[in-house]
Image 1 (tube, rainbow, N blue to C red):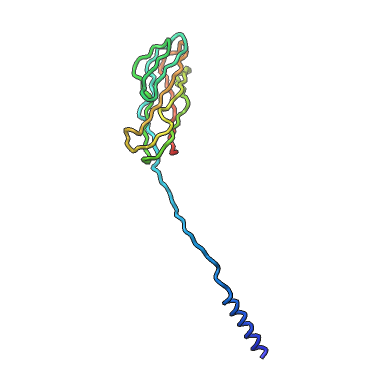
Image 2: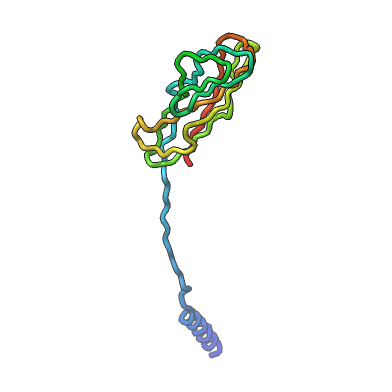
Length: 166
């Protein structure tokens, strides 16, 4: 009998533990996964910054090409002629997105051992891409510092613009 009582007690303890145990309180939730893919933004040069032809004077002065209109302001003692243009750029990217526009602060124009520096100014620092090519443009003008009796010759320099999604 003692074996029978031990077996009965063991099975009743087992039954009590199974019946007395309740399922853990489990909870679940779900979340969405998202991604917003943007078209790669590109920028293309459509025209160069051209200060045109300048006759240097006896004193240092500046020539300004406006970033939006490309119009010239010829400094005192200088003679400016020819057609000036602001550097032009076109943008492509995802319509409705905003991009930041940054340009090098200056460019050095060089002719052999001679040089001049132009400070640069963009027509826009921010731009919302419209998707209409004619309106997705900006320009860069500058102020060229011409030295007194600046050596003659064709001067050339290059600068960068960087466009990024905001």
